[in-house]
Length: 230
Length: 253
Ligand code: HEM
Ligand code: SF4
Ligand code: FES
Image (cartoon, rainbow over all chains, first blue to last red; front, side, top):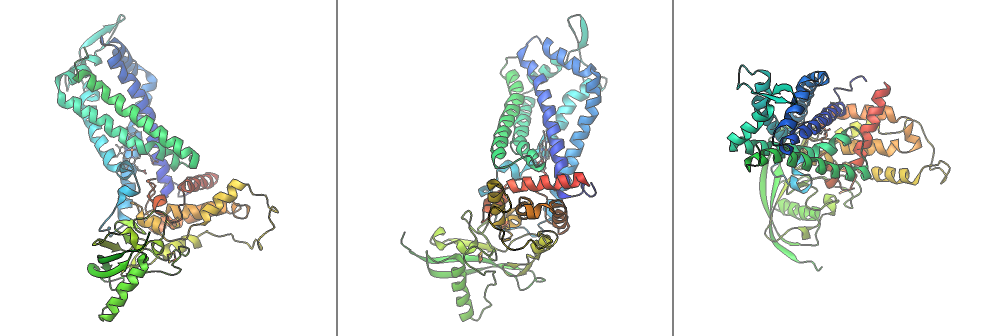
């Protein structure tokens, strides 16, 4: 495996595997989030959130997830910088919309916007849950005799109190969706799992996942925005 | 469609004295161009005009003028080989342009393809990648009898598709990352699919990718622009095969 990780294809494999790992995380995250709109009492979501907060497996996965993000972001930055340098003199006129999709040409910009969203998102929830003494302290809820943090109240409270946050979270969902329209199929191409037949299937699946993520994540703030939540 | 006459066209052309000089765009007018004229013939007409006026003609690459050698280049109105899909510049005709149009003509822009003069770039980088492994080391004899070596129809077809690459450089020129992956993939694929080339497939994939990286081409991000601009419509499925070949080779190391 000498020089593998520094080769162009090696770096792409890192992007691909970290990206696919992040997609699998998004699947779990979205499933859990949808509990928010399926049970207005908040019990279902609280049980889910409590399970994630206390499960030892999740405790191990959490730092791996953080590492996944960090690797994906660092490699993306290195790749993007190298690619910029590969064309020292730019074209005067370019007509790129004729030969490639907008998302595929703007993965770094989309990724960077997702990252900005991510920082705000982590501050809103993760920070408040991990360091209750520093932010808004969480109230307690009792579900089936078990005492747990009322995460539902935290999330619902944010969305009910602020239209701006609702719109921001809707935008976050759409941005991730756009990133996936290219990212999903591209990840398979990067590790060599594609040909002329599979490419069409993978592109189709990419749009499927993109729509599921974009609609799935934005439907939650929309639900509260429309006053349907508790 | 009968040919008509384009009364006046404005050409905005990149002029650069030599590799060291700083270049700039200059504007020229050409008149009464038949729509049946090829794009390169239109540039010939401009050059005759320039020679008559005692000016330096525009230097541009061309050879076969029938789409088989890969010598012609040019980034025309923001696209490699101009506005048509699947053609070289020598196959592009003036019927694709409108009366009174301003046409911007630039050389390939890619760090690994430095400009030598005007619209001519040095594409030796592609030759160097080929020299790194784009061949079969031993003599495999003349053309074998049909069916003497069993090759599946699918493999033969795909190898032929890959072998259509004429090394024009449009893939790296058009790629937002200046990546040469389509060219390298075509060369690796063409040989990896056939028994004569398979023997050295692992070494070839590693050597050609290493050379490509060393020469300063960018990293592929699968935008697919190369495939759209490739005059031979080479599919990026060959890039997936190159990725597979490279991964397999590295895993064995
Ligand atoms: C939940 C968040 C994210 C997911 C699920 C995700 C997923 C993916 C996937 C699957 C790919 C395709 C990899 C490939 O082409 O082999 C990709 C590419 C890319 N991502 Fe992300 N990503 C996320 C966040 C980010 C962030 C925060 C950034 C950067 C600041 C970023 C920047 C990029 C770039 C520049 C590419 C294209 C690079 C390339 O194709 O080599 N992504 N992403
Ligand atoms: S792959 Fe296509 S665009 Fe690239 S050099 Fe070969 S023929 Fe030209
Ligand atoms: S001059 Fe030979 S391909 Fe255009």
